[in-house]
Length: 135
Image 1 (cartoon, rainbow, N blue to C red):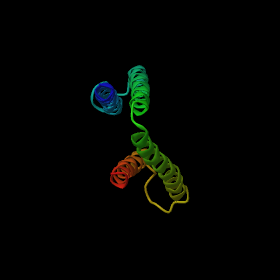
Image 2 (spheres, rainbow, N blue to C red):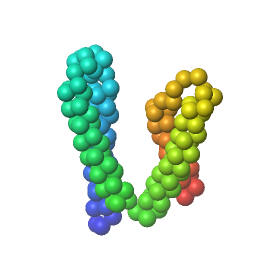
Image 3 (cartoon, rainbow, N blue to C red):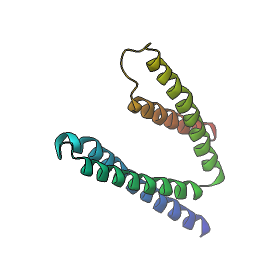
Image 4 (cartoon, helix red, strand yellow):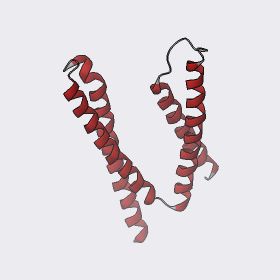
């Protein structure tokens, strides 16, 4: 019985995390593309869109924390290992990327989106390896 309650809780927390992540992604797209295609460069609307994005981001962070707290010890370890590796790669890779830009080794300006992609792939690979390692 307790096992079923735990599974139901994880399922509900996963659904909640998906919901907040969806809202955050949509609001990010809205804040990014709204000024280009909808409201031109209206500063007030830009600020509102960014504040809404931050609010949904906070909701996503809280939902992610709740999701992780509901996991068993092994799943928590896998998540924390993947997050730790992604954080390290993000900091080391991001600062190296910034240095490449500052020293004009790369021609274009450093873009934050590349760092987000690097962190995301590192996290996903870390989760995949962790799941395989502990099966």
